[in-house]
Image (cartoon, rainbow, N blue to C red):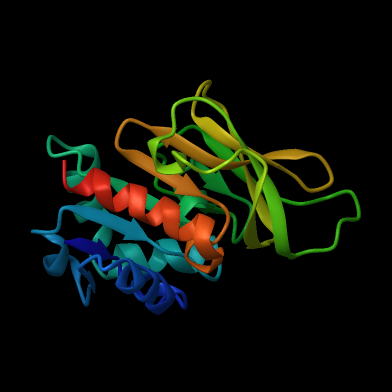
Length: 203
């Protein structure tokens, strides 16, 4: 069973629909108690980093995520879009401190680029990334983002995308995976990645 963190993110239903297509059992949680027995967690994200952090704090999800994902259990975790950004130290969006699971900053695209970036863009994969197994490097995925992560730790960036210059679009360390692009809206490649993640949950 995969638990989708339900905190008002607009793409929670899209994630569940994609998992349904794969025949993967999942629930959208109504509170942290619904995630106590799941085998893996997906944190979707649409909206701002500061609003997401406020929702996770006020609804009690932060403690649950820290305990089940980063504690002794270390169940598989997948962050999507803002669900990637809030894993880092600080975001310019709302000038907010985030979960701080990884050292790094979240900054707005500059250089006169149109924001948000909306549409399909290629992801060049590298390193150890079981969620991307069977997906060709250079495959296009669907993005909607005005901000990008700038990791300060070596080795966690396993996907890079060019939008006015290269930025990190996917990370992986241990049981934690996260992507800037919307896996659930990226057609067959996205379904392949969700299938790979679901397989991790069964191990």
